[in-house]
Amino acid sequence: TIRFEIEDQVAIVTLNRPDKLNAFTEEMNKEITKAFKDIATNDEIRAVLLTGAGRAFSAGEDLASVKGDKPVNHGQFLRKRYNPMILAIRNLEKPVVAAVNGVAAGAGCSLALACDFRIASDQASFIEAFIHIGLIPDSGSCYFLPRLVGVAKAMELAVLGDKITAEKAYELGLVNRVVEAGKLDEEAFRFAKRLAEMPTRAIGLIKRTMDRALHSRTLEEALEYEAYAQEIAGKTRDHQEGVKAFFEKRKPRFEGK
Ligand code: LHQ
Image (cartoon, rainbow, N blue to C red; front, top):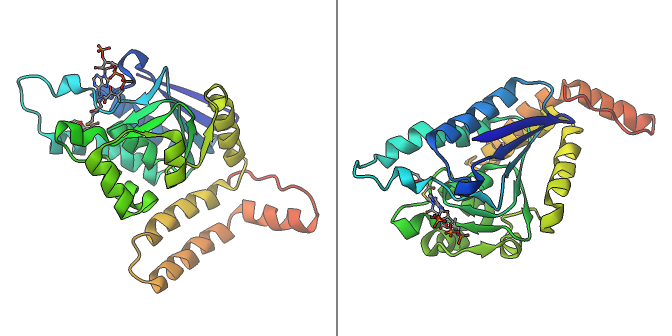
């Protein structure tokens, strides 16, 4: 239910149930989580591109699983299937770019928000669709949304569940770039490849340090974590190479180590 490729040190993960708008099944959740765990331990991979096959990014949970007579415990559902998937992305110390090719609804929207960067096609849209079926935004949306757009807008998006266009998402700060639909693959890959050529350890540490700073209680605490993370970055070969290249007036060749 997903495709996995590696090209120029970029892992390309494609949600691949196009006839179901890439709606999630248990199998798919597990495959995505496993892919991100494999990426964590594969030194050849220095950036990830996450996208959807066909006209959608993802329509969220495949509601076929909820419509049966058997009641589903949504809490357990999330703990087992979705939370590990979201945590695998946030805990990955490599940059993750979502190439949002079409509609991202419900947990599909959450998945896009869990990534570090979002490049949207001008045909993409975002919907916190949960409220339309009497649910709350899950899979990290209640965490990511207010951080990305502020509490007032986050409440509006979560409670009203309106579909917003890529352009609107850009204005809100929800996506980093909007590109022509026909150029999305190329532009998003170029972006991911650029990241893959950068100091991977430092990017991973930026990701971790920013995530922590967002819930640091004091500036002191955040400064201390920066010092701790910088100590690690300072010991990398990429740091040495960066300084050396600067004085030799040439482009650095980072290895991700
Ligand atoms: C679908 C779906 C779908 C099945 C379109 N499932 N078939 C966590 C905890 C526990 C339980 C529940 O879930 C969660 C997490 C969640 O993600 S909850 C939120 C689940 N997602 C939604 O509620 C979104 C439902 N879908 C929509 O609102 C629309 O379909 C969107 C906006 C995604 C796309 O709209 P359109 O482009 O107008 O396409 P469409 O509505 O015509 O859909 C095309 C087909 O895909 C259609 O089937 P059909 O047989 O009529 O062609 C839809 O029924 C089917 N489909 N989403 N999530």
